[in-house]
Image: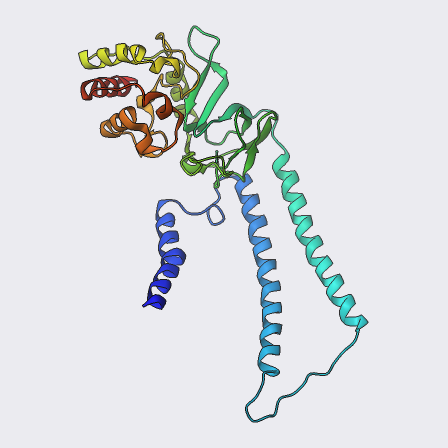
Length: 344
Ligand code: CUA
C-alpha cells in the first residue's frame, strides 16, 4: 500500500503537475519569448547537456565496478588489481574536469555579458518590490495635470518589440524580479538599485513570480506581464494617465464616500479623488485589471471577499492587519465593491 501511494506521489510530481503547468504556459527553457530568455535557455540547456554527459560517464563506471566486482556465491570473486598512484589517470581527471569547468564558465561569461548590454534607447519602468505585491511606475508618463507618474500594481504592461529597462527598488526585504519567458531573475535589494531589461518578441501574456523567499506571502507575490502591440500599449498608457472616472450608480457613489470614510484612502491612491495614500496599490484604474491581489480573478465576489476579509485570500497581508479593526457591513462591502469595479 505504501509503495502504491509513494508511486502515485512520484507520478503526480513528475507527470501531472508539469502537465498542468504546461497546459497553462510552456516553460521558459522550452519556449523563451525574448532574445534574453533565449540566451538564458541556451546556457541552461548547454549546462544540462554537460552535466548529463558527466553523470552518465560516472554512473556507468560505478555500475560497472558494482557488477564486475560483486561478491559471488560460487566463490569466484575477483579482487581488482590494486593501484597506488597513477600519474596518467590523475592528470586525465584533473585536466578533464578543468576543461569541462572552463567550457561552462566561458558560455556563462558570454551569456552574462550579452544580457548586461542594456540598449540606450530602452523604455524605463521603475519596479518596487512590496510585501507582497509589485508596483510599476512609468517615469516618462505622468498623470494628466500632475507631475506624478502613472503607477499600477501586479500587472505589468509593456509594448512588444521594444526594449524595456527595469530599475528595481525595495524598501523592505530582498525580493527577486523574474519573468521566466522574458529573462532570468534579478534580485531586488533594499538600499541598492539593480537593473535588468528585456524585449518581448511577440505580444502575449507572461507569468512572473518573486523568486526570493521574502515572507509568508512569497508564493502569492506573482504578477503577469502583458506585452501589447505598440498602438494598443499607447492606448493603454493614455487611459492610465487619466484621472479616475466619476462613479455613476448610487451604490458606487456610496462606495466612493466609504472609501474615504473607512480609511482606505490612507493607503491607496485613486487619482482625481482625495485618496492619495502610497502604502498599497494605486487603484485609479483598478477595474481595468484582471486579478484581485494577483491571486484571484477579478470578479465582484472576489473583490468583495478581499475587501471584507483579505486574510482569507492572502494570509498575512498588510491590508488585513489594518482593516481587521474596521468592521464593514455586508451593504458597505457591496458599495465598496461597486465603486472599485467602476474604476475602469
Ligand atoms: Cu517577494 Cu518573494
